[in-house]
Amino acid sequence: MKLINICACFLIFFVVGSNSLKILGVFPTISKSHFTIGQGIVDALHDAGHDITVMSPFPQKKPKERFRDVDFSEVRNKYQKEMNINAFDFGKMSAVNTIDWLFKTDLSDIDATLNYESVQKLLKSKEKFDVCIVELFFIDTYMALAEHHDCILIGFTTFGAVGMIDEITGNVSPTSYVPMVVLGYTDKMTFAERYWNTLYSLYERITFHGVGIPRQDSFYEKHFPNAKKPYFEMFQSPAIIFQNSHVSTSYPRPYLPSVIEIGGIHVKPAKPLPNDLQEFLDSAVDGAILFSMGSFLQSKNFPAEKLNVFLNVFETLQQKVLWKFEEDLPNKSKNVKISSWLPQRDILAHKNVKVFITHGGSLSTTEAIYEGVPILGIPIYGDQKMNINNAVAKGYGIDVHFDDITEEKIQSALMELLHNPKYFETAKSLSKVFKDRPMTPQQSVVYWTEYAYRHKGAEHLKSAGRDLYFFQLISFDVYFALFLSLIATLLIAIFICVYLCRIFCCKSPNNKPPTTKQKKKKN
Image 1 (cartoon, rainbow, N blue to C red):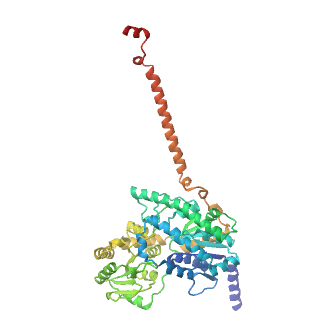
Image 2 (cartoon, rainbow, N blue to C red):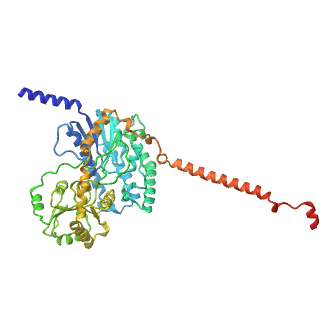
């Protein structure tokens, strides 16, 4: 029996080991929420038996076999100290300023990251990998690591419709019903919204080509001087793009075969709660409310007048409130429990949680839909406004803008969500849609990663649209040529009509010139 078991283990090791891929994950942004998506991707691949190396500022807390970190957390820590900004101030940025800020901020970290000791050690080793998975977020230079380490490139984004993905893949995003993320519109736009959506899309593309690409190209040439491909060819080389989106949390829109939706990749089975949280929620006979503004925004930074609004409203509730609050809060009521960190995903799975007060980040709204919990959204910046507007449009959420926070509005929104069953029923219905897929997000990641490797980069999935300029991709040049042709045709038609009129008018009896005899007679 022991011999059989040993042989079986050896066979399993041989089969898994022989099919194991060496995968490099490159997750350079300092945002924990962005990293969480990348972590979900590599965790799925690791569970499938592949060897993982991750370059990020978030090393593992508990090291795992076949999982190696290339840690540059000091770069993140230094940047956070220098940044010194209240995240709520991001809500004051216009859409134009947001794009400009992203180009400047994310690019500024490329030098510091690629020159960091642990990263340089990996680069100089020229270790070969099978697949390189890179986050795409205004930091395309990192895609060059795929060629540097001689492997297939796969990209991923932390949210859905972004113009960059269209540039990479040749995908088309009609501005008539695909809203730009930072504008916060839904897919059902008014004429004015479609106007601004189109205008902003053009601005983003012009800025991307006029500012983003030249700057990225300069970093590319600086750090990868021996690269075989020119920058733009490298930029268009990903075999697959994983997108953290799903129709249940966003809206239906066109995607090419190489763009794969993996919304919910970070959601894992709920774990048991710590005893104090379990007891607190179990005792919430009238229901409980979870309040969290995510990993970047912090409730302690709420202005005093807005903080007092929540304290006063919570004091009037029969429900209990779990609040992610990063410091002591001595004047809270007895039904409120605070903590600087909360296992948000696991709390939402508790049967007594009836409402989730959230900033509307993609991870938070996804977890709420997964568990079928209605939301009260307080969006601040980025994709949050769009996520919350989608929640309102779909019928499982209510929004209160940051500037509009008052006791009356918060109280009214909570009462509506708690006592009107339509929000709960809609959330549960969307939860079923979210989970009803041919493959889980984890299975999709594993399948398509292995598919790209099996087919040596899956060139057959890449669209010819990649080779077209933006104005060609939307056939603007064709429409413009048609417009000129129409104008030319009209001008020719007018000229012919005028010419014919002159001919016929000149031959008219009433317009005959006087004869010589008639002239003499008059004289």
